Length: 135
Image 1 (cartoon, one colour):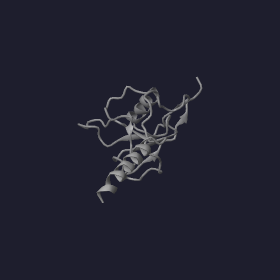
Image 2: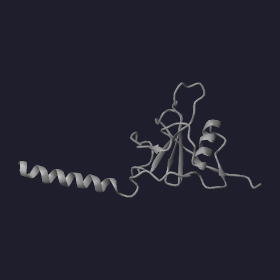
Image 3: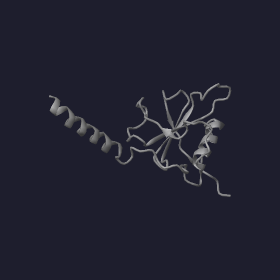
Image 4: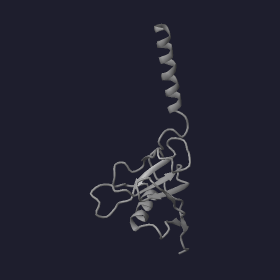
């Protein structure tokens, strides 16, 4: 039994290492990851959410340490995707002593989908960017 344990551990460690290196499993490189130029946030979002979307479009700087971190979708509320696909950003809540419950979650690098939650991941609604009027 002991003879099998070491080779099994080596195989397991190798498999975990390879799994972690699969495309889409690593966080993206830092830099701007925002919405394409020419679109803006819909007006039905709180002003703070629109401000957060602008920060995402500029690539920061973000006010919270966890902004831009990988969102695991453990609640299963969003479509299934590879680890590292979703990232979360805090939407400040006026009067809250902490980060509050509001977030924007983006999918893709650069983002191709955006979601808003105001109840700390219990529900999401898609954010559909609207075209900016021509100057």
